[in-house]
Length: 170
Image 1 (cartoon, rainbow, N blue to C red):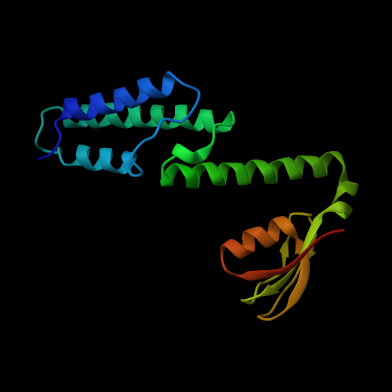
Image 2 (cartoon, rainbow, N blue to C red):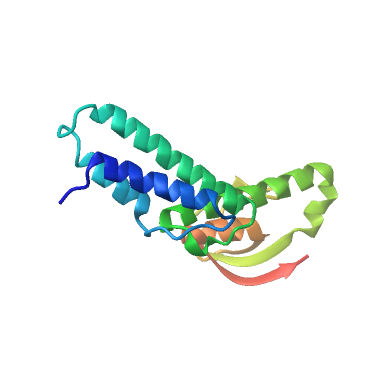
């Protein structure tokens, strides 16, 4: 049986109240956000003022996410984060690390010479590009090996374009 509008809003309100009561993330079902939106969508055309209800619940879900995101930024572990949240949080951390590295480069350009490097094998042809050390490298063909900054190796490996063979700090 589908949830009623007041049940959906009460569920989200309860989750927000629990999040505000502690510095740690509170456990949510792994698909909490998706399921709540699905339950909400099931009410379309069946309840009066559906658009207002939808807007209210979406804003409350956004508030819940923002509270949880703030906790992670402040160091809360990801153990109780949903799978969707974990993806966002990990992208955020990846972005902040890259940004810190870039700021460090602006303050100390000589730091490029101390960049951690990785020996990689390319699984796909790649055109030349500017790496995280602000140097143009490439192009590379399938099977080519090269030393590239470790940050770039991490990113390219996530897309299956390379395999890291060896890491070194030069």
